[in-house]
Length: 226
Picture 1: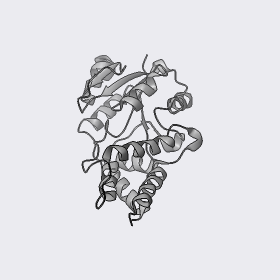
Picture 2: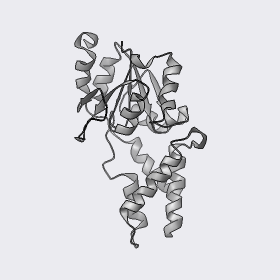
Picture 3: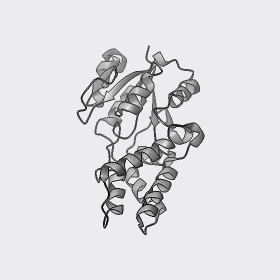
Picture 4: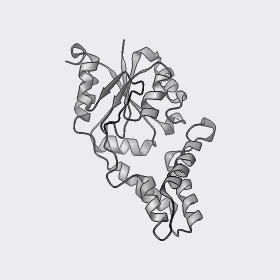
C-alpha cells in the first residue's frame, strides 16, 4: 500500500528555464568568436557532470560542479570571464522559477492522506528558495547536497527509504526525467509516474504516465484523496 509520494522538482513541480539551458548559454559565450562543434561541446559538458554525480566518493555540490566545469571551458577557449560570477548568475535563474499552476493544489491535497517528500538533484538553497517563492511545502526535502549523491544512483533512493523506515512497495516516485526519476527508483522496486509534459514517446518502464499532476488523483484512488 502506498503511504509516501516523492516528487522530483524542476520539470515536475516547477517550470524549466525559459532562457535556454545552462550548457547552451555557456556554449554561446565560448563560441562568440570561435567555431566549436555543439555536439562535441555537449558531450564533454555531460561527461564532466557525470564524473561527479555517479560516484559518492567524488561528490560535489551542483554549484561546485558548475564552477569547475565552466572554468574548464573558459580556460580552454581563452574566455576572459569569472566562472564563479557566471555560475551564480545561472543559478539565480533557478531561484526565480515558477511552479506549474496545479502543483500547490495537488501537493496540499495529497498531503492530507500521504507523506509527501521531494527528492531533487540540486543544492539546498536553490530548492528551499524556489519552494518558498511559490508557497509550496512538503513533509521532507531530500537533495543531492544533503544526501551526498545524485539520482539515478540507487543510494539516493535507499537513503530516503532507510531514513523513514519505508519499503519500496510503500512509495510512489513522480518525476519528468526518464533516467533519474524512472530508471533509478524502478531498479529498487519503487512504482513510478512519468510526468510527460514534453510528449516523450516510448515505454521507459514507468507504471503510469501523466501530463498534469491532477491526474495523480485517479492513480491514487478517489477515495484516498477526497
